[in-house]
Image (tube, rainbow, N blue to C red; front, top):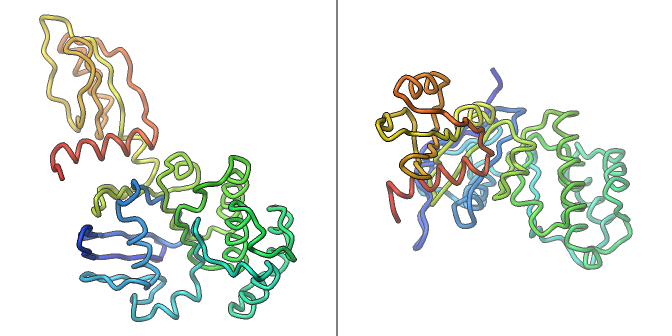
Length: 298
């Protein structure tokens, strides 16, 4: 079994108008976690705690075997971080940034950095202030990847990118996964991107972790079941149903615990199963959040 790269146990952080509440999260080394939540759900606060930039009020955090935030200096030698609003030195060139990072991190891989320059169509003598937003994100990704960190933390890295730049960034991340098996913590509200590159999924809503499991297990369990209910029949109690939409005669059930035996059960009760539809990660996230908010309104 892979060693844990990240372990958060009972982590809470309280602010005047927001609380991160009892986060329990584990990420084995070599895995890619898609950390999904709406804006303001607690994604960035979680990342700041993982980086040792914010001290949790309660609970424990270990990253790469180091207690955070007490051992943040040792841990951050092996953490690469990219955010859509990275603060690089505008008056300095990309080459200066590369030399600076290379001097700080002995695992810096110059041939790899050169290949990323070509892939991202970046010129090392360009000043950061002259780069577009997409170019700055790609520059930040280059600086993080060429360090060859054990853990790469991405905080909404593709926000604001045009479709071509977004595709280039995602393609490079996929290459890293295929070639290096690096651990990645990918925070985003873009479920399509997360679905493409992640093998583990976590949902966060209003400061609470509401799901954490392997992506394929999550996608396999959630289904939309479309039924035709004749006037003489009644809708049976089915396991895991979180939402019922449609009409009384043509209900659409969303279930988080689909079992093929449900089809036979419905047919035995005189119902017609018109379709059993798989759900996208976005549909699962929205249904999960909506059903929980109905039970626990703000």
